[in-house]
Length: 473
Image (cartoon, rainbow, N blue to C red; front, top):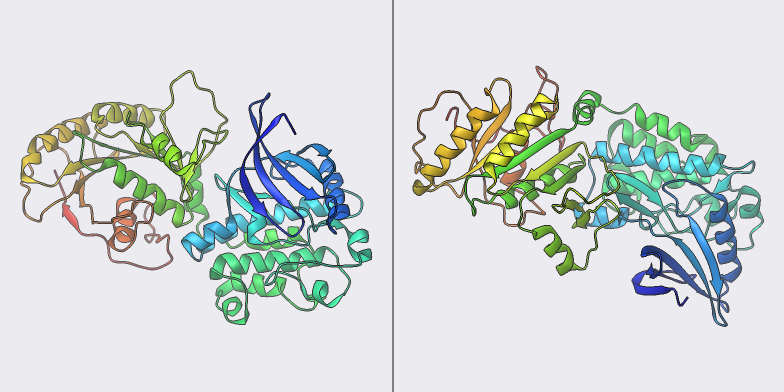
């Protein structure tokens, strides 16, 4: 253990304690599970190590080593980055249907991998939100201390599970098979959709076809459930009512650039709010710091949140990427939407927007102007840069008036048109709420739906369009 530096406790459970550690020679992060040799769970811990050693999946931790001293055994695993599904739902409340479907399909894929990795299926047996991590839109599975082969699970003298997620046959001493994990998939889907641990009220509150899938998974009679995790995934895959929208966001990605002509206009506040709003409504978005403020690193240091292998700090469930120099090489990450904060670098933002558009990438340019009467020069500079971006008919561009007083602005006439919106007040950019919902929805109108069809509301509710400052500038 001398080659590791223990950083902090990641979690504590019935069998032991998990630490975040740093391998001093390799400068690499590890998760180290410490279990007392005197623990009744010691043999189960050794089975977990041998099981993980046989598995190879990018969303399941790799086992690097197993060490022991006179008192403890230590399992050195790959450190998987992300927020637990429990933390995500605890912070955001119920997830919308598209997020439940997207995460659910990934969970089904992980469980199906376990069931088919060997001749005898491996049963996970403790599928619950604290054991599922979400990192950059990818679900990862950890804590295999209850997992066993189908044969071993049925021969075990004791059975364990998590209240609200344990299948009836686990509780009642019945036969365990892959449908036991299918039950727990249904319990996790119910947790995401209802925003809490399943009970009769929450379970019945999930409407429509998604609710029907959940109820079939949760049947007390295992014979009435889906026959495999793969079948559940296929059923979830058939529910996407917004396939065209998702296709538009992924191919190519949408880039939203925000900039102003002077500091203090509130670009960063709006950009963080937009990225947080998208993520909260089930559309993965990355906030990119394109200005030179260094705010993202400062936030990470203040909160003790290190950058991951992608160079990203995850702050309150929002992925934030600092500005890096051209020599820095990081692992690639994919997000359907990039929200770029250029601060007061208006000209740089406009030039890159033109480059993106010429390369065929979908772009939206949001120019932020102060709303006071003395901001006239900033507005003139913004109007000049918007003309360089291209005609409004061929490029998305909006002027956002922030800190505006109604009637205080007199917009100069200028050739070409741009949509103009007034930014509402929302105090916490990481939790935009109230009028911010309708505002961001209106700002992205045309980018989250197929042109010519009914406007798509990410929250599933119809709202009146956000009020505009005017139709031209």
